Image 1 (spheres, rainbow, N blue to C red):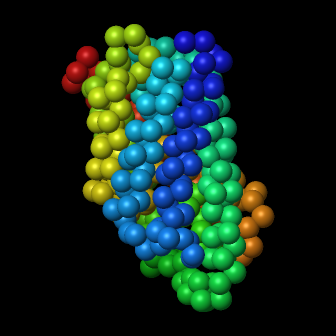
Image 2: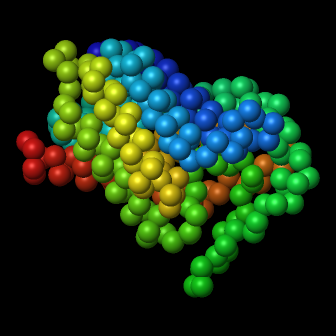
Image 3: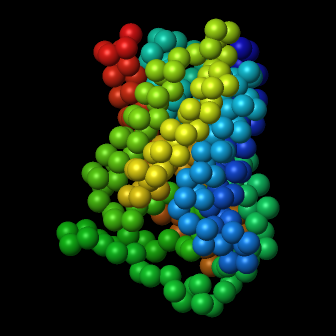
Length: 262
Protein backbone atom coordinates (compact mmCIF):
# COMPACT_ATOMS: atom_id res chain seq x y z
CA UNK A 1 0.00 0.00 0.00
CA UNK A 2 1.35 3.43 -0.92
CA UNK A 3 1.32 6.36 1.48
CA UNK A 4 -1.29 8.10 -0.66
CA UNK A 5 -3.55 5.02 -0.59
CA UNK A 6 -3.21 4.80 3.18
CA UNK A 7 -3.96 8.49 3.71
CA UNK A 8 -6.94 8.57 1.34
CA UNK A 9 -8.34 5.29 2.64
CA UNK A 10 -8.08 6.34 6.28
CA UNK A 11 -9.50 9.79 5.52
CA UNK A 12 -12.53 8.40 3.68
CA UNK A 13 -13.09 5.53 6.10
CA UNK A 14 -12.80 7.60 9.27
CA UNK A 15 -15.00 10.32 7.78
CA UNK A 16 -17.71 7.74 7.04
CA UNK A 17 -17.25 6.23 10.51
CA UNK A 18 -17.80 9.60 12.22
CA UNK A 19 -20.55 10.68 9.83
CA UNK A 20 -22.63 7.59 10.59
CA UNK A 21 -21.58 7.23 14.24
CA UNK A 22 -21.96 10.89 15.15
CA UNK A 23 -25.05 10.96 12.98
CA UNK A 24 -26.86 8.33 15.02
CA UNK A 25 -26.08 10.26 18.22
CA UNK A 26 -27.44 13.44 16.64
CA UNK A 27 -30.53 11.56 15.48
CA UNK A 28 -31.23 10.29 18.99
CA UNK A 29 -30.54 13.43 21.05
CA UNK A 30 -31.45 16.44 18.92
CA UNK A 31 -34.77 18.24 18.97
CA UNK A 32 -36.90 17.89 15.83
CA UNK A 33 -35.17 14.65 14.78
CA UNK A 34 -37.46 11.81 13.77
CA UNK A 35 -35.30 9.42 15.81
CA UNK A 36 -35.21 11.52 18.98
CA UNK A 37 -35.18 9.41 22.15
CA UNK A 38 -34.53 6.17 20.25
CA UNK A 39 -32.13 5.24 23.04
CA UNK A 40 -28.80 3.59 23.75
CA UNK A 41 -29.49 0.50 21.65
CA UNK A 42 -29.90 2.67 18.56
CA UNK A 43 -26.61 4.44 19.32
CA UNK A 44 -24.61 1.27 19.91
CA UNK A 45 -25.91 -0.48 16.80
CA UNK A 46 -25.50 2.72 14.78
CA UNK A 47 -21.82 2.86 15.71
CA UNK A 48 -21.42 -0.83 14.90
CA UNK A 49 -22.94 -0.37 11.45
CA UNK A 50 -20.74 2.70 10.99
CA UNK A 51 -17.64 0.57 11.60
CA UNK A 52 -18.87 -2.14 9.25
CA UNK A 53 -19.63 0.32 6.45
CA UNK A 54 -16.32 2.15 6.76
CA UNK A 55 -14.26 -1.05 6.85
CA UNK A 56 -16.04 -2.55 3.84
CA UNK A 57 -15.54 0.70 1.94
CA UNK A 58 -11.84 1.29 2.53
CA UNK A 59 -10.28 -2.03 3.55
CA UNK A 60 -8.61 -2.55 0.18
CA UNK A 61 -7.10 0.95 0.21
CA UNK A 62 -5.53 1.22 3.64
CA UNK A 63 -6.50 -1.86 5.64
CA UNK A 64 -9.18 0.27 7.32
CA UNK A 65 -7.55 0.84 10.69
CA UNK A 66 -9.72 3.96 11.20
CA UNK A 67 -8.39 4.24 14.74
CA UNK A 68 -4.94 5.23 16.04
CA UNK A 69 -5.23 2.58 18.77
CA UNK A 70 -5.64 -0.12 16.11
CA UNK A 71 -2.70 1.33 14.18
CA UNK A 72 -0.51 1.25 17.30
CA UNK A 73 -1.56 -2.31 18.10
CA UNK A 74 -0.75 -3.54 14.58
CA UNK A 75 2.56 -1.62 14.55
CA UNK A 76 3.65 -3.26 17.80
CA UNK A 77 2.51 -6.68 16.56
CA UNK A 78 4.31 -6.38 13.21
CA UNK A 79 7.25 -4.24 14.34
CA UNK A 80 6.69 -1.80 11.49
CA UNK A 81 6.11 1.86 12.39
CA UNK A 82 6.97 3.38 9.02
CA UNK A 83 3.41 4.27 8.00
CA UNK A 84 2.03 5.13 11.44
CA UNK A 85 2.22 8.94 10.93
CA UNK A 86 0.34 8.62 7.61
CA UNK A 87 -2.37 6.53 9.27
CA UNK A 88 -2.68 9.04 12.12
CA UNK A 89 -2.93 11.98 9.72
CA UNK A 90 -5.63 10.37 7.59
CA UNK A 91 -7.61 9.36 10.66
CA UNK A 92 -7.54 12.81 12.25
CA UNK A 93 -8.45 14.66 9.06
CA UNK A 94 -11.17 12.13 8.30
CA UNK A 95 -12.64 12.43 11.79
CA UNK A 96 -12.87 16.20 11.45
CA UNK A 97 -14.45 15.94 8.00
CA UNK A 98 -16.99 13.43 9.29
CA UNK A 99 -17.91 15.67 12.24
CA UNK A 100 -18.41 18.64 9.93
CA UNK A 101 -20.69 16.52 7.73
CA UNK A 102 -22.80 15.60 10.75
CA UNK A 103 -23.25 19.32 11.43
CA UNK A 104 -24.32 19.91 7.83
CA UNK A 105 -26.73 16.96 7.79
CA UNK A 106 -28.37 18.04 11.06
CA UNK A 107 -27.98 21.79 10.69
CA UNK A 108 -31.65 22.59 11.32
CA UNK A 109 -31.86 20.19 14.25
CA UNK A 110 -28.77 21.68 15.89
CA UNK A 111 -30.32 25.15 15.62
CA UNK A 112 -33.71 23.99 16.92
CA UNK A 113 -32.11 22.15 19.82
CA UNK A 114 -29.65 24.82 20.88
CA UNK A 115 -32.18 27.65 20.76
CA UNK A 116 -34.99 25.79 22.51
CA UNK A 117 -35.61 27.41 25.94
CA UNK A 118 -36.78 24.15 27.47
CA UNK A 119 -33.63 22.31 26.40
CA UNK A 120 -31.32 25.05 27.63
CA UNK A 121 -33.13 25.41 30.96
CA UNK A 122 -32.97 21.65 31.53
CA UNK A 123 -29.17 21.40 31.32
CA UNK A 124 -27.96 20.33 34.78
CA UNK A 125 -24.84 21.64 36.38
CA UNK A 126 -21.96 19.22 36.02
CA UNK A 127 -21.48 17.19 39.18
CA UNK A 128 -18.18 17.22 41.03
CA UNK A 129 -17.20 14.42 43.37
CA UNK A 130 -16.58 14.90 47.07
CA UNK A 131 -12.87 15.66 46.71
CA UNK A 132 -12.91 17.19 43.23
CA UNK A 133 -13.87 20.51 41.75
CA UNK A 134 -16.96 20.55 39.58
CA UNK A 135 -16.13 20.14 35.90
CA UNK A 136 -16.88 22.95 33.46
CA UNK A 137 -20.42 22.85 32.15
CA UNK A 138 -20.56 21.29 28.69
CA UNK A 139 -23.06 22.33 26.07
CA UNK A 140 -26.13 20.23 25.32
CA UNK A 141 -24.74 18.83 22.04
CA UNK A 142 -21.11 18.05 22.90
CA UNK A 143 -22.01 14.38 23.08
CA UNK A 144 -22.77 14.36 19.36
CA UNK A 145 -19.11 15.15 18.72
CA UNK A 146 -17.16 13.60 21.56
CA UNK A 147 -17.43 11.52 24.71
CA UNK A 148 -17.70 12.40 28.38
CA UNK A 149 -18.09 10.53 31.67
CA UNK A 150 -21.31 10.15 33.59
CA UNK A 151 -19.27 10.11 36.82
CA UNK A 152 -16.02 12.06 36.62
CA UNK A 153 -13.39 9.89 38.31
CA UNK A 154 -10.13 10.22 36.40
CA UNK A 155 -8.62 6.82 37.15
CA UNK A 156 -11.91 5.02 36.49
CA UNK A 157 -12.61 6.92 33.27
CA UNK A 158 -9.07 6.19 32.03
CA UNK A 159 -9.30 2.53 33.04
CA UNK A 160 -12.65 2.14 31.28
CA UNK A 161 -11.21 3.46 28.01
CA UNK A 162 -8.14 1.24 28.34
CA UNK A 163 -10.25 -1.87 29.01
CA UNK A 164 -12.70 -1.22 26.18
CA UNK A 165 -9.96 -0.49 23.65
CA UNK A 166 -7.97 -3.54 24.71
CA UNK A 167 -10.99 -5.71 23.90
CA UNK A 168 -11.42 -4.02 20.50
CA UNK A 169 -7.79 -4.17 19.39
CA UNK A 170 -7.24 -7.70 20.68
CA UNK A 171 -10.32 -8.77 18.69
CA UNK A 172 -8.81 -7.18 15.58
CA UNK A 173 -5.37 -8.70 16.11
CA UNK A 174 -6.63 -12.21 16.80
CA UNK A 175 -8.69 -12.20 13.61
CA UNK A 176 -5.50 -11.47 11.72
CA UNK A 177 -5.00 -9.89 8.34
CA UNK A 178 -6.31 -11.38 5.14
CA UNK A 179 -3.99 -13.14 2.68
CA UNK A 180 -3.36 -10.04 0.61
CA UNK A 181 -2.23 -8.07 3.65
CA UNK A 182 -4.80 -5.36 3.07
CA UNK A 183 -6.67 -5.54 6.34
CA UNK A 184 -9.57 -7.52 7.76
CA UNK A 185 -11.57 -9.64 5.36
CA UNK A 186 -15.32 -9.39 4.84
CA UNK A 187 -16.20 -11.62 7.79
CA UNK A 188 -13.61 -9.85 9.94
CA UNK A 189 -15.28 -6.51 9.27
CA UNK A 190 -18.63 -7.90 10.36
CA UNK A 191 -17.16 -9.44 13.50
CA UNK A 192 -15.41 -6.17 14.37
CA UNK A 193 -18.67 -4.29 13.95
CA UNK A 194 -20.38 -6.59 16.44
CA UNK A 195 -17.41 -6.28 18.82
CA UNK A 196 -17.97 -2.51 18.78
CA UNK A 197 -21.67 -3.04 19.50
CA UNK A 198 -20.78 -5.37 22.36
CA UNK A 199 -18.31 -2.90 23.85
CA UNK A 200 -20.92 -0.16 23.64
CA UNK A 201 -23.58 -2.26 25.34
CA UNK A 202 -21.33 -3.65 28.06
CA UNK A 203 -18.70 -0.95 28.66
CA UNK A 204 -20.13 2.21 27.12
CA UNK A 205 -22.12 3.38 30.12
CA UNK A 206 -19.34 5.05 32.17
CA UNK A 207 -17.64 7.17 29.47
CA UNK A 208 -19.49 6.76 26.18
CA UNK A 209 -16.74 4.40 24.88
CA UNK A 210 -14.49 6.55 22.71
CA UNK A 211 -12.07 3.60 22.19
CA UNK A 212 -10.56 5.70 19.38
CA UNK A 213 -8.44 8.84 19.88
CA UNK A 214 -9.23 10.30 16.44
CA UNK A 215 -12.95 9.64 16.89
CA UNK A 216 -12.97 11.83 20.01
CA UNK A 217 -10.29 14.47 19.43
CA UNK A 218 -11.09 15.36 15.81
CA UNK A 219 -14.82 15.98 16.38
CA UNK A 220 -14.09 17.78 19.67
CA UNK A 221 -11.93 20.25 17.72
CA UNK A 222 -14.76 20.68 15.21
CA UNK A 223 -17.20 21.33 18.08
CA UNK A 224 -14.89 24.05 19.35
CA UNK A 225 -14.70 25.68 15.90
CA UNK A 226 -18.29 25.43 14.66
CA UNK A 227 -20.57 28.48 14.99
CA UNK A 228 -23.14 26.70 17.14
CA UNK A 229 -25.24 28.98 19.38
CA UNK A 230 -25.25 28.21 23.11
CA UNK A 231 -22.99 25.22 22.54
CA UNK A 232 -21.05 25.56 25.80
CA UNK A 233 -17.49 24.42 26.32
CA UNK A 234 -15.71 21.52 24.64
CA UNK A 235 -14.56 20.02 27.97
CA UNK A 236 -10.85 20.12 27.16
CA UNK A 237 -10.02 19.10 30.73
CA UNK A 238 -11.35 15.64 29.95
CA UNK A 239 -10.11 15.43 26.35
CA UNK A 240 -6.80 13.71 27.16
CA UNK A 241 -8.52 10.62 28.60
CA UNK A 242 -10.14 9.38 25.34
CA UNK A 243 -6.75 9.88 23.64
CA UNK A 244 -4.35 8.37 26.17
CA UNK A 245 -6.69 5.59 27.31
CA UNK A 246 -7.29 4.07 23.85
CA UNK A 247 -3.61 4.36 22.87
CA UNK A 248 -2.65 2.55 26.06
CA UNK A 249 -5.34 -0.04 25.39
CA UNK A 250 -4.04 -0.62 21.87
CA UNK A 251 -0.51 -1.14 23.19
CA UNK A 252 -1.77 -3.44 25.96
CA UNK A 253 -3.72 -5.52 23.44
CA UNK A 254 -0.60 -5.93 21.32
CA UNK A 255 1.35 -7.04 24.38
CA UNK A 256 -1.30 -9.60 25.27
CA UNK A 257 -1.28 -10.84 21.67
CA UNK A 258 2.50 -11.26 21.70
CA UNK A 259 2.40 -13.17 24.98
CA UNK A 260 -0.59 -15.39 24.30
CA UNK A 261 -1.05 -15.78 20.56
CA UNK A 262 2.23 -15.08 18.73
